[in-house]
Image 1 (cartoon, rainbow, N blue to C red):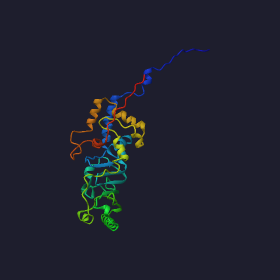
Image 2: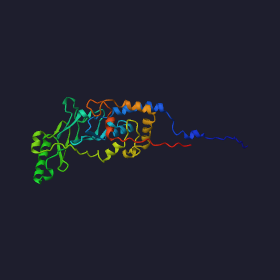
Image 3: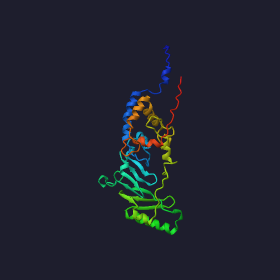
Image 4: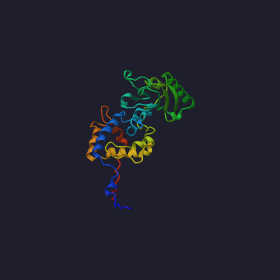
Length: 305
C-alpha cells in the first residue's frame, strides 16, 4: 500500500541568509572582557626611540590567538634606535614588563635592571642570557689601517671579557659590537675606554634598526590592528602563519559592535596624557600604533538576495 504523505518542505529564504547569529550585545561584552586581558599581558614601551621585536601590536594579536604567548616569547628583542639592541635568547616572559624602567641604552653601553634591589634572580625576567649589539661610531672607520682595526678589536675583546661577557664580533663598517652575556648589569664602554677608541657623537640621523624598515617586523606593524576600530589587514594571518578563520572571528569580535560601542571600547584602552611621556599611562598598543599603523577602509559588504 502506497501512501502519499504530500509533504512539501521548503527552506525559507531568510534561513539561507542566516550565516551567523548576530549577538552584538554579547560580542561587545566579550570584547570588553578580552581586550583588557590581552593588553594586561603586554610589556610597556613609552619612549619614542625604543622598540621591541615582535612589536607590541603583533604581541597583542599573538596573545589573543594563543593565550599565554607573552609568557614564552622566543628571542625577544628590545632596542633603541641609533644605540643598539638586546636579543634575549630562548623563551622570555614579557608580561607586564616596564621596559622603559628596566632597559636603558646610553652612549656605548646598555644597562638592564640598573637598581640591583629590583633585579630578579639569574634566569628570571630579563636577567638572563642575551646577545647584545652596541653601535659604536668610531672616527674615520673607513680610513682605518689593518693594524689599527686589529688594535680596536683587541681592546673590545679585552673589555668584553673583563665584564664577564663573550666577544662575538665587531663590524667596522656598521660600527656594531656584538657580545654574549649570561646575566645582566652594566655592559659597554666607559669614558676611559673611549679615549683608546675615539668615538663620534651619536648621529642625529640615526639608522633605522633592522626589522623596523623593510623587514618582517615592519610589515607586521604597518598592516596590523588599530585600537581605534580599524580592521585587521587581510594579509596579516598568512604573514604570521595564523588561522584565517580565527582572525576573522577576532575581527568580528572586536569590530562588530556599533560605532559608539567601539568608541567606548577604544576609550578604555587610551587616556588623555601626551604620547610617549614618561609619566604617560596610555595603552602600550596606542603607543605602538601611533607611528606604524595605517588606517584601512572597511570593505564594502555586498548584500545577497
